Image: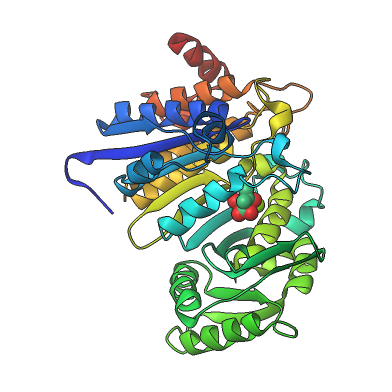
Length: 377
Ligand code: IPM
Ligand code: MG
């Protein structure tokens, strides 16, 4: 999607916990891109999640909804607060806001890329040879399945259920996107399901087999989710595009993130027919709130995915190169650099400086990068 005049309206939902801190760094990145490329990004902040429950009684107000519906894109930090955990009697939770947002905007395809950085290989809990050549794009269905089926918690009989249902249309529309992506990558698609047990998984296989006929160059693998969880650790480089339903995708993307060294590195894009939302895959990390230790990179890379969505390819590349630079030079938060850690703000400043810099990144030394940063604060 490209807009005339290069002007974009972005709704920013900073949310809870570390959300506002990481969003602040993403805003610096957006401002740096705006400055460098002469775009105009109109950032409109709105309440969402636990903070919205505190202020308005609900996690996703009509005001926020209307703003999102009229936006070119949405940038989300994180939502969730421990005060809602471990209390089944609580009726309103921040997560309900996120699910409603995804549903209302029709954000059915959630794309979670996993990249391994050479200089972080020793941080990965997996041996270096196992993560060689790992480059996976997870396509997680985001508006169907068990997350959205009918639910009941019967306090009298102490029974509960969550129904998992999928229609052909819901499967087809994300599967097509995943096939298209595989065609531009290594031409491999793995459908992860539980077709030996679940009716919905059988439907997924049937629909994917039909679509496969239109993509003869794409090799398709079918894998049960229990095996996939194991294969991600034993032989992750076998995956290219991994397509799966909502809950399996939630679980497998957290598992996959571990290979990279930190969940704080993984961005995501949630794309529908008309709307798009960009958010890190991690949660609100309440224990870290206000400590300046949260990793802002997943959110900054989510901004890069937003630039791709706007068809601003050069801008997206520049963000990714600045991120590569801080990773290579270990200008990183404690999750990735426990001994010699930098703060959330510091990492965000350096990335913004690198983007704004007139010099090509290969000519920038670590000293220059750090000194440059001093000029903007
Ligand atoms: C994610 C999160 C959400 C999900 C939660 C916060 C509802 O874990 O985006 O992966 O389960 O989808
Ligand atoms: Mg998750």
